[in-house]
Amino acid sequence: MQLSTKHLLGIKDLLPSDISLILSTAQQFKEVLQRPIKKVPSLRDVTIVNLFYENSTRTRISFELAEKRLSADTINFAASASSVSKGETLLDTVNNILSMKVDMVVMRHSASGAPHFLSKHLPDTAIVNAGDGINEHPTQALLDAFSITEKLGTLEGKKILLIGDIMHSRVALSNIYLLTKMGAEVMLSGPPTLMPKYMEAALGVKIEYNLKKALAWCDVANVLRIQLERQNQVLFSSLREYNRAYGVTSKLLSEIDKDIVIMHPGPINRGVEIDSDVADSKNSVILKQVENGVAVRMAVLYLLSGKKELSS
Amino acid sequence: MQVLLSPEQLDLTIKRLAYQLLENNENLSDIVIVGIQPRGVQISNRIVDFISEISAEKPSYGLLDITFYRDDIREELHIPKETTLTQSIEGKKVILIDDVLYTGRTIRAALDALQDFGRPQKVMLCVLVNRRFNRELPIQPDFYGIAIDTTASQKVKVDNEHNQVVLY
Image (cartoon, rainbow over all chains, first blue to last red; front, side, top):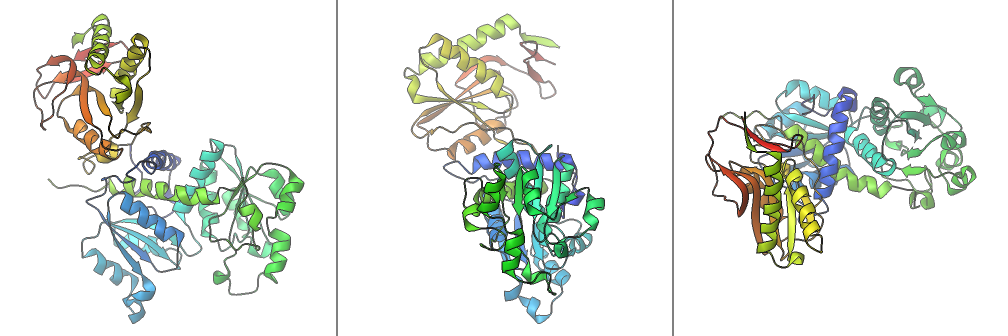
């Protein structure tokens, strides 16, 4: 059994069987991470470059840790400290790195479709999308799914609510693809100005603008960050107003009186999309998500690395 | 197809191996029995069940998956099974149990994997079938059910459904 794809560009391209395979493999890697020595030799013949054209804390550290736990050699590249500022193109940069015998590329880029572009030019190198613009962030959706499964036992039939800046969130799109493929019900809630209305018909999700009603419906609430850096026009009047209308507060949750699993992909804007006491409550799995991220990324890298053809 | 161990013989062999493990390890609290995934597990389950039956205590027991330690990962991608070895093996006597010892590569991987769980005082190997020809590494069992001499084109299978061991 293996993945149906050579790259992980987005959840959109995966089959449900691929998703199940990644999640069940991640389960075994999670056990590896509990051992006295949290490292396996599986990828010791593999060199991976982490190309980060956009800032990141969690994802970059998580990928690097996953690579090291698999014994891969890693190179880190941050666009701000590289020859990109001298005008080198993406393809030139990557080809130069690959000529030094690199096997896999993990890439984050602010342009949607950047990893897809790369995969067309580099068919023999496994490319893992670590977030591209407002398109997808597949490993985040996978670790969210892993965390939900760990908490609730299954994805099938579960009601998942995504709250906030749906328009600019690659986490939202990857989550929608993944959850609908795995038989979960998805609802979106957020200000109409941040809600792509096509999604209801095109992706088979529900939209509910009243946050209280939406919360009363769901088993899991995944609270998304307001992506101010991607908004080039005024889409809501102030952060305070946003918090009053769409902030997840303990007051709101207590009125619903139902145990809802609280998730957030990070980084959190405390007091904007989520209040501190909710983010740190017993129903919150936010730090579990980060922990599971390493195991999920190990699974992705392990499963993609196995495709390499050996000439004997 | 040739039957190497009939259901009656297989039952007796499992019991003999259990007795041999007890005979050579006076103090059950010193040992950790480790079944190798996937096919060693049926055998190790039966041996551990029988040891629990004939001795007062239940031995410390866990399953070990060796997928991430294989040396053929670039030839074929294997999908990992569950590892349940959570107890410390530091300073313990570990008994590895597998169904068939053939090339020795699985045991090599298992020895590597064990190191990540601590430093055992001693590691022993117990297999149901010892295929003596075509070993590729210097690994031999401490305890075995039967020893057979076969060519590389033959296959040995522990048929758990019919409770027998066959050669075909």
